[in-house]
Image (cartoon, rainbow, N blue to C red; front, side, top):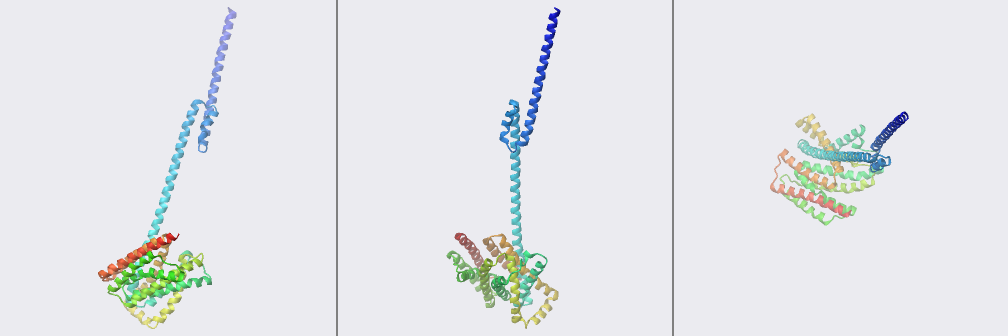
Length: 411
């Protein structure tokens, strides 16, 4: 009995020991599996962004079992949702950034157009007001380009090279620029002769004929024919100008012929500028206009002295007696600065829009100038003058559109 009891006790202890060993073994196995699952989750969390499709295979290879696989699927879904959310946020950010950039560019372009219109109106009104007290168009034309040249020199001296001459030019380049620059100078003088002789509205209406001169000169000099539809659009311009000239109360032949000569010389300038821009490299439109201004000073100053030199002292005294030195000097300086800046803003606008948009802007500019001059000076326009001006301006807009279509058709 004693032996049996001992044997039983011994076996019981062994059994108890065996159960304890089994429990210890199971506990260790569970701990090992939990540690493996934790390690797998960490690796999946760090590598899922690069290899999201391999997470399940990784978990299965590490012996994670069914529960581990489910946890991996949940993690995988969370990672994919996070990536999709981040991608959507990035796309939204890029879209808002590009939209903001486009809006900013449009605002800058609108700003240039507004400045172009405002300064141009100021120039025309100040210029005509000055002529009422100082009727010396040759001298005033010279003052315009002299102030512009001083402006360019000051900008260049202060380091704003892109706003003036850009870079020095060679003697050969100067020769090439001199052609269109001389046409610019002569056209500028002719336009001022017209401004001094007739109403601003008449001069600007006659100047809508400039495309007709350009078409003829392009064909005769460059050998570039103008398509028939484009030529047809010149008919309403010519008809409208004819109506205005026949009914304008301030019409005289000096003002009309001066405006026509301005169209001719500006047409030559446009044709010659195309050849110059292709021959002269690395010189922007701003720099080309700056050099054109300096060359215009050299041409306008001697002509002013020849044409008005003898009468100039008496004219200055009469203007000073009427306006005073301060007001007379302010008129001269401001009209020259307005002239240069409105041309500069026109170039800036042309660089940011296509030629059709620029042409339409130019038509709107003439409408604003004509309207503002009528209101400011109280000019009386007949019904025929108003209708003729509208027809001429509409023809100019049509010409610009058809010219653009013809260019695109060639391409």
